Every structure is written in structure tokens, then in C-alpha cells.
Image (tube, rainbow, N blue to C red; front, top):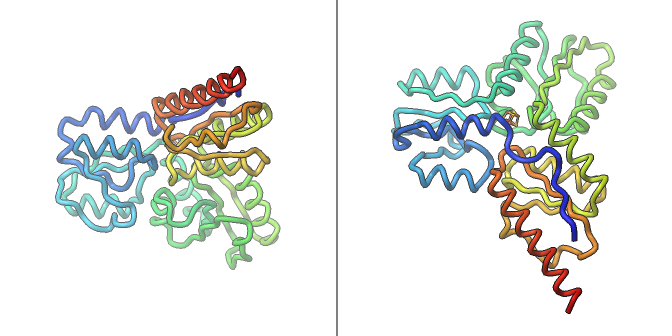
Length: 288
Ligand code: SF4
């Protein structure tokens, strides 16, 4: 069994910068993380062990007793920022600049008098942050949800971790179903997500099966796994080496290894090492 790593995989600069900033926080017991810093269990367990408190993403409307609130790389709306500041919280902001860019795009389109269509996952924290400052919007998860909108001007943006193929498909249906509308699209998929997705395309061409490493709730990790699976490759999504089942693998396979943008280098290396061990066990069996 051979293992090939994707040319681009693992943690993006947005998540790395957020983690670096947290490393510099002297007293984590003052800080509440406003939702999951990243959708990655390994990272969250580490942060909690260091003394940070994490508010469940579905319970962010409450207020912690801690004085400092850390805004995650997913960002929040201006409305939410104001609510926290009005409650006397000191904000530590790790919003990724590429999420900010998506906010700016939404506000530009709003200021042009457009109704915003956001291609993304309904209820995802980044999507919540993007739409909360808008007077009106629709979130679209698939082409089946595209409607005929009663607005003459439409503005289309996307969640930063959407896949290019999904966005292209949905965008085409929006245009098709709203032929008389003035539609402006701003591509807000972030470059690291695109790089990961393009690298997985090249990887798929060289391998028989794919292992994707990342949090179960990570949107971009799930997208990588879906892409590999849609292209007909047996695919397994694991959070770490313990999730690998040696019986799933075949000695003759070349395995492609990729990982989402919130996956630690150490986790990827641990999965890679476990794959090498499985490969070595096949060699031992073949010699026996
Ligand atoms: S996935 Fe993209 S938008 Fe999200 S933190 Fe990473 S670089 Fe920023």
C-alpha cells in the first residue's frame, strides 16, 4: 500500500493566526471563546485544558461571567459585536481577514440595494455572522432551494468554505430562474479552501482511495470527503489515527491523504504514521 499526501492540506493561515494569538493570552481563565474556535475536537480539548471556556455554538445568545470574549475566525455580525461590547465585554478578535472580506462583500451588495443570496450551510456560525447585519437575505444550500425571487436586484456571495463546483451550479440556477433580475456575484470562497479543493482533485487522479483528516463538523473537511467520494473513490473521514480501521484498506491500493483547514499538523502526521504501519503490516503478511 502506498500513501500520497495532497500538495496542499491541513491548517490554513486563518486558523494558525487564531491559535498563535491564543498562545499569547496570559490568563485563559478570563476568556470565553464565543463558539468553537475551530471545528476540530482535538484543538477544542487542548484549549479547554489550558483554561479557556468555550460557549456552545447554539448558546451564544447568552453571556458568560468571564470579562473577555474571543471572537473566532468564523467572525460575528456587527450587531453581535455591539451586544457583547454593550454588556461590558472586552473583545479579542481572531476573525479571519477572508471572512471579513465576505462581510464587506455582503455590505457592498446591500448598499447597492440588492437582496442577498448566500450560498452556504444554514445555521453555520460564519453564515449567521454574515446575514445578521442584512435587512433581508436567503441562504441557499443546494440548487433545489433556488427560487424565483421578487427582487429586481440580487447579490450573491458564498460561505468561505463552499466548494467551487457547488457554487457554480447554484449560481447558474439562480441566473436561469431569475432571467430578468440584475444579478451581481462576488466570489467569497477563500483561497486556502480553493487550494485544498484543487489539490484534492489532483490527488484523486493518482489514488484508489482517500483518507480525509479533520473535525466531524468541519464544513471544508466534509466538502473534501464528499468530493473524493463523488469522484468514485472509497473515502473515509477520520478525526485522528484511532479512527482508522485496518480492515478497510487493501494492500494494492494507493491511498491519498488530505486534511481540512482546521486540522493540526501533528494530527495529520499521526494519521500518516498509522497508514504507514498498516502498509507495513500488509508487507509482513505478504512475506509470511
Ligand atoms: S478556511 Fe479560509 S476563511 Fe476560514 S479561517 Fe481558514 S483562511 Fe480563513
